[in-house]
Image 1 (cartoon, helix red, strand yellow):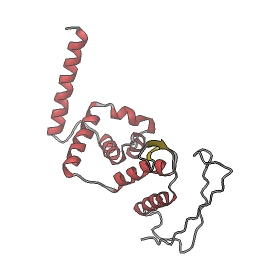
Image 2: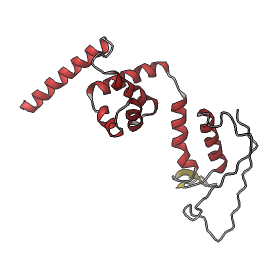
Image 3: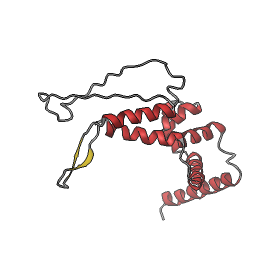
Image 4: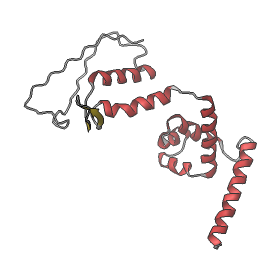
Length: 181
């Protein structure tokens, strides 16, 4: 074997021993700031946000994820969470946010013709977009106190970018009588 492979095997053996020691003893070699980063990272899987919330510079997040103990601690936490099968507010919000570009017509989505043929295209779903934004505002208590008044929203849609003939008249009306819960 080459010297590099032998050195790598020794390094891995030492790393595995350090990880095992930390798992058995409550992660004593992982400082509280790094533990906080791990917990924040698990909330939304955004290393920049987790680094900032834990008190590191935003650019440090990806470096922290490559640290052996940090990666092992995140893995151990994920295993514990998987056992509990929890879905929290942050997870749901991330899923809503991933869906939003498809609903807003910014990304192509699979579609089916009446004949059963599949194709991909961009399609704006106004009512679903309003619903998603409403759900996100509820989960973040955006309108917790309520305004007590009415509001108007202007939505600009680039129909040409969506492949709609700009000479063809298009009208959209969205009405809502929803009250905040």
